[in-house]
Length: 135
Image (cartoon, rainbow, N blue to C red; front, side, top):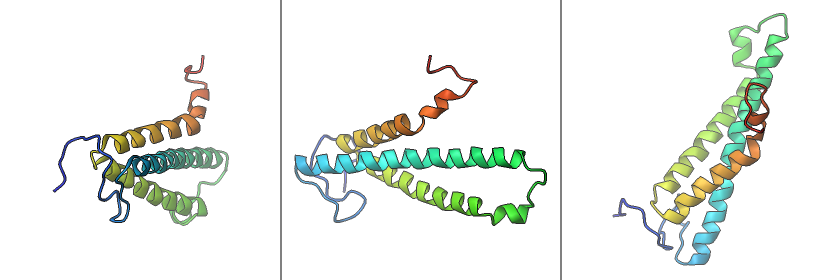
């Protein structure tokens, strides 16, 4: 039974999958790098979906005829958004499960990865004319 407390160890018997194991610093560091990338990809995907939504919303405002529910439901952009949503959901649960190993190094990698991803991919939220966070 795994302890439900944060620990600083380098030995993990299963991270997401039974064959993803670490027993030394090299293993935990390699896992951290992979988890940081996973977190950044998660944030990039989340921001890309937001970008697609805003672009689609702007395009729909400029058209004269509003698409029917059926046409919108089966549109290529909505199907793409649905697929990306499912991938984002899976990645989010992967990150949550990694955090739930209660390994401080892996939890830190999740936080660093999502923070790095937000920094890289969400910078344009600062350029909105209604905000003044960029100075």
